[in-house]
Image (cartoon, rainbow, N blue to C red; front, side, top):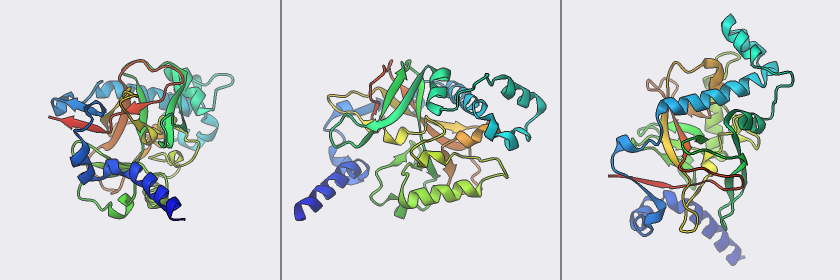
Length: 285
């Protein structure tokens, strides 16, 4: 009985320690290969924000067009030219499976599967096509917290808290209190039939196939990083009908700044069957 409890605690600790500041301070320099070194904050981005925006908008438009039957109420709120554009993009048998839409639009598709690393739990794999270098390959979903907002209870034993360079936090946990908070904030921000964020990433089948970034595992000596995190702020001019695919929501409703998103960008070409690995720590000098 005691041994089983110790095994459970060991498993939880192995998952949580990467977010425990004292452990990080002692161990961060012990394995340089798992660190991403950036000389300046301005050099943190591998590709431009415009390219990231182009990639996700292209996918979101394809997802919207592939499921127009369920978008009638939203479609009626758009201009006649936008309605015509979406209707013209629908084929005779428009694909509705998000993974297939992703492949047809971006040339590759990803999926959650058991990780190739021992005791690492779930991982993210390229299942179709080849990811080109610089492509937006995933998004980190969750509730956005500013540095001064309460997140203590959500953070307890939570291995999915992502810290941005400016101190903004993203809670990517799809269970427990974190899940309830995200659903509440998403429902609060809804405008009639129009959803301003995606809640399906909390389920086994997300409508936005990119929204699995929280399950990308840390690299190791044997498995080098093939993707990196990149912060991206969604502009206020983002098409409102496509907001339903954004897997992030602000904790506060009246947040004056743009919605923060974090995407994962390919560091090299990633081939079918490969698991995605990132650097959990970026050291900015």
